[in-house]
Image (cartoon, rainbow over all chains, first blue to last red):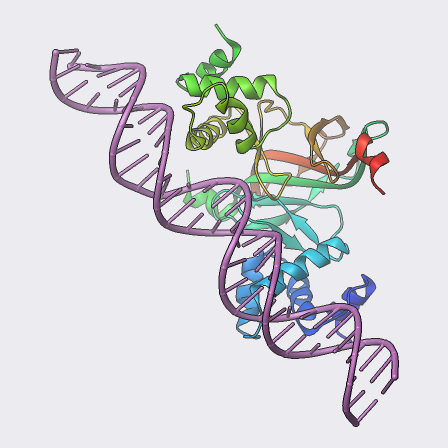
Length: 137
Length: 137
DNA sequence: TTTTAAAATTGTAATTATTACAAATTAAAT
DNA sequence: ATTTAATTTGTAATAATTACAATTTTAAAA
């Protein structure tokens, strides 16, 4: 069985054709795509696909913790099949979002005790990637 | 002179009446407001104020590093007069955004060397605040 | 297997945050 | 006082996302 399908079932999501397509895209393309990027890529292979289905599915996947939403960009949400705690980097030049190797991330402890119960921690870095370093500034 | 005014001048921003109003609001209200919250609050005291001016000013303040933009919420950007590196928490219940005391934040070192130059690191936590813990779930 | 019910998908319209832009106002410079 | 530049304003446009009703697909029951 396809990995995407397994992944969905594991998270109590019925693996419809559309959902498997979307889940599979996220597993294979670790570029932290936007909903629109996903729709445009998959639309050519599945011309009946609706943009709404992409939004609905992404919402479902996030709710069931099969993927995570990344709000590193104020314009549009991005999605990542890797739900482990890892940092992200967004280049101010090209706009690309990449995984980033961090040290000390796991050591972050938030004083939650009294005030808050924390389910999730996101780390977002901003700056310039190698390519954009040369081209700009 | 007003603190807000000083703060603007320090960041090379001409302290117009509107800018001082907005800067002052952010300094006095550490609730990480949205542009709309700022507009609605200030509009009653300054009925000539335009929503566009709020957006323009916030953009200018961010560009000049007089404030920082927080993208913890995918719906709308939030703003914070405190530009030091500190973590934020958003309650899934009430939607409020609060500062959070963290340990180990300063210890985060990103392996930037080769790949990236990092200007800024944001840490966002999600969960439930004290109040919403009781009320929900 | 046919019928019925539930779930998922689709397309369009609505909503919301934000930006573009041109006109009007205010401030600064000559 | 005039001219120029900067800022503010209001409206219209854009872009991402959501609401919703209709349709299609899947599952369940008869």
